[in-house]
Length: 70
Image (tube, rainbow, N blue to C red; front, top):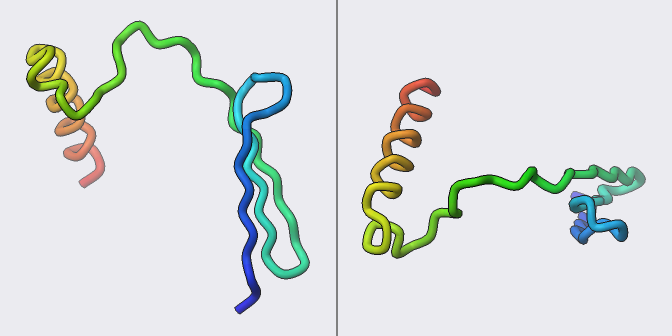
């Protein structure tokens, strides 16, 4: 199996990230745009303690997602 090389870095213009990978004789580059600003706070480990209402909302959304996938 050929050795693989994976590189991830911020795009120079600050508009997102780019990931490039090499496998044998091929090289691919993927560009991921910066996500739009979200109005809700990001989840974190102590979320259920700091903001229990938001934590329960996230759990309900995740459970609904899991039900859709099955």
